[in-house]
Length: 293
Image 1 (cartoon, one colour):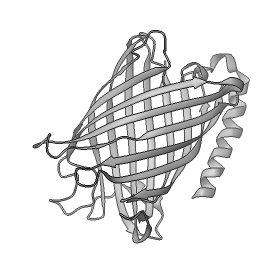
Image 2 (image 1 turned 90 degrees about the vertical axis):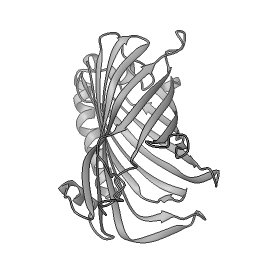
Image 3 (image 1 turned 135 degrees about the horizontal axis):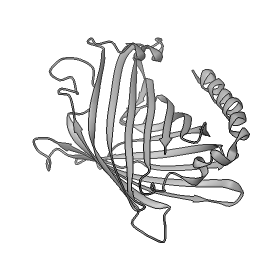
Image 4 (image 1 turned 45 degrees about the horizontal axis):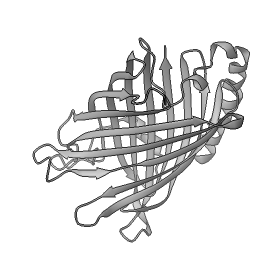
């Protein structure tokens, strides 16, 4: 799978890099609209981020890596629409499509795209909800935050009643993201993101809630007006009531972004999990699409 991903990156760089060089003046949204910037009034953005996570091992409570006798694969498609009602406020909607498959440890993770429904596989449009994005400081457009409230759309996502595989928690999610980026010398770019995710129980919101906050750093470079590369790292702690640091994971990887046309941007990335506690030790393959007009 790693070899296939490197081949994919190579194809993207060779193919779309040449296409972008043909008409750079019409395809510069990649450099004009960095991740922290809001849309202008009347602009619309549609994002689809596809994440394939697969694991055959996990990190136990002592942070030691343990092998599993099965492969767990999760596919998540995060779909978001944003509309600029002003240069400092954007509103929109987010929808999650998710699939899970438990299989033999030597199985192909791409089998998840069969989207079967049985005791080891499940697929659903799992969550949806409104989102708002704000640029709070008029003199610093490269700092913004986005807040989203997600409602579960299907019942028994945990599989407690049906005996099926775990898809997600049967709870509400309040997800707030803080963004900051800066274009440095020689077209290098630094992007920081800090999230606060609150998992809220539907019946006992103040007793059964759970908090975790991913912290991410991306460092990349625009290789031209139409494509760029980056490396990233993330530390995500999960805070509990009995054990303060109930779990955590470290994620690291690299990716490429390509402005294919004036309105379409593609992103491909690969990540792995070199460290953790009470979390999976898998890897992810990611493909994102961004439409902006």
